[in-house]
Length: 213
Ligand SMILES: Nc1nc2c(ncn2[C@@H]2O[C@H](COP(=O)(O)OP(=O)(O)OP(=O)(O)O)[C@@H](O)[C@H]2O)c(=O)[nH]1
Ligand SMILES: [Mg+2]
Image 1 (cartoon, rainbow, N blue to C red):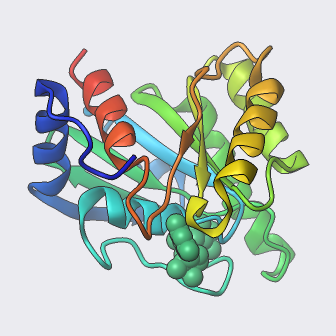
Image 2: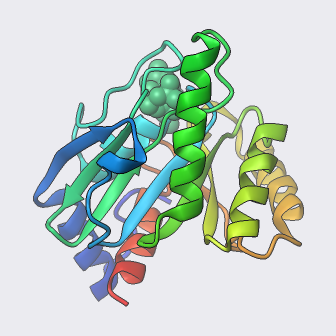
């Protein structure tokens, strides 16, 4: 599946929205600094280096809207991106990054958890998982937090270009089994590549249709 695979009214709307007016709004380090909860928000969570910022860039067709890096722990704030005044994307700091100082890690983790649990306009969290590595215990912890808070989430495999199709199919099956009994998990898993554009149209369409309701 390539990026612009379909031509339905929804895919057209989604493409226009994501490729249209899009700007970095602000980066926050405390709950008090969050923007007013006046637009639907879609967050991108996952371990450090999994490809959160790269996916946001690919979704919006911008090369460097969100800062990406080979060094894990690049994103240290909650970064908000406004799409046409219709919705916001939220790039979260990665979890499971050991090289930062402990207090820094705790404050990012605390802020991220508070945001994930208590943001009323958060419509869906995308939990990104590197398709080469699969689910890790920290991902399971995040899913449990969201299940307990009844915040809907969807699993997104990243860097699918790095593995063979047979391996990808196995990975999708394994993740599907792991989320089977989780109440807040969306049953569909999206396999993506920020390099090739695989899965990008499907992700855009999911957010666009939720934001419209
Ligand atoms: N081949 C390939 N590389 C990718 C893909 N997505 C991201 N990368 C690479 O993975 C590295 C990390 O990407 P980022 O987008 O910065 O990851 P992140 O999850 O935002 O990382 P933190 O902000 O540190 O948590 C970069 O070197 C990217 O170029 C992908 O789909 N395919
Ligand atoms: Mg990042």
